[in-house]
Every structure is written in structure tokens, then in C-alpha cells.
Length: 236
Figure 1 (cartoon, rainbow, N blue to C red):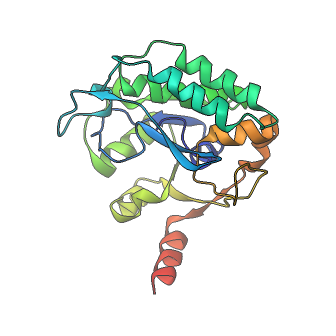
Figure 2 (cartoon, rainbow, N blue to C red):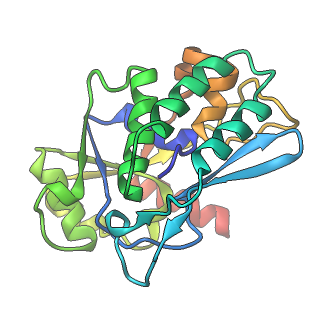
Figure 3 (cartoon, rainbow, N blue to C red):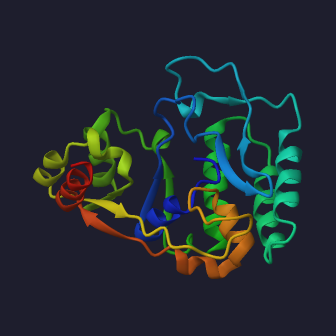
């Protein structure tokens, strides 16, 4: 994802190995190339323009459209929106470190945005980052995910909520791999422009809190059975 929300970094804080799953299908309308920020005029989107997208192409096959200076527009919107934020300079330094590098593919940009934030919070010191496209592990779906976990000697797979409807939990258990879902706390932090929302770019946390933002990355996990039970109760 592109400068994603705080939840992604909570997953990273819990892991030893983080895998950018970049050789799976790109989906229009998702958060692969866009993210929300708060402004004095309400929610706005930072959107990376794409070139020649086609149905079925993978994220690492998705090219960025560099015919316009979209990076400058993004940075200007960030400067305006966070002009009064106490750690605006930190946020802009992180953003500029990504925008000032040349990226041809969306996967490169997205991975760079995530890892630049991790360097800021020093999450890179004890964690390793990988791309699924470089692992040479075949397959698809649950089988491939579990093969990647086993590749790194893992015994626990931590995931967001999107996997609940398709992941093969029993298959993982049969292989000795515990599946854990993030239990998002969504703890409010000081934030500009109205009521708090956690569903904005991590750049918002940096601009408002700085490196102390690390203390807000504190969500824990639930085992898959407890998580799915809780989801059924909510839906009842």
C-alpha cells in the first residue's frame, strides 16, 4: 500500500519478517495507489496516477504515469494541510525522501513509502523486509502464503481483517502455523481538522505526534477462532 494507515505499521511492529505481496492482482478502487489525508476542507486523496492498466495485471506490473508532476502536487497539498502541525517538518522529510526518488512501478513506490516510515520509527532495526516476487515461491491463495511463512521458518502468521473470508485456517493449523488477526485499537492521537479518524495516511500521525507516534502502534492480536467468533457476534 501507498503511505498506508496506522494499522499496517502495527502489523509490522508485531512481525520479524514483513513481506510486500507485490505479485498479486492489482485492483482498481483499492488503496494500492491512493490514501486519505485530513485537510481543513475535509478528507482528500493522495492518488498516484497509473499508466496502461489492464484487467488481471499484478501490482508489480502496474506502471506509474509520469507525464505530470504529481509528486509536487502531493507535497504541496501536504504542506498546506499540515501547515500548523507540530511535526510538519518530519512528515515532509519522510514524504520527500520517497517522492524525490524515481519509481517506475507502483510496487516500488509503495514498498519505499512503507519502509521509509519504518526507518523513521526505527522499525527496520529488528525486522526484515521482502517482496513476494523475489522469493520464487509458486502457488496461490492460502497455500502460497503458508509456503512463504515456512520459507522464513515462521510459526505465526499475522494478518489484517481482509483474509477472514478466504483464508484456510485449518490448513495453517495442520502445518503448525498459528493464524493471528490484528485487534485494532484505533487509539485517538492529537489530530488537526475536526473529529479524529484513524483511517488516514501514517503521514498524519507523523505530522501531529512525531516519533512519539510509535506508542500508538500498540494493537495486539487475536487467534483466528476468537476473531471469527467475535465477527459472528457483531454480525448477529
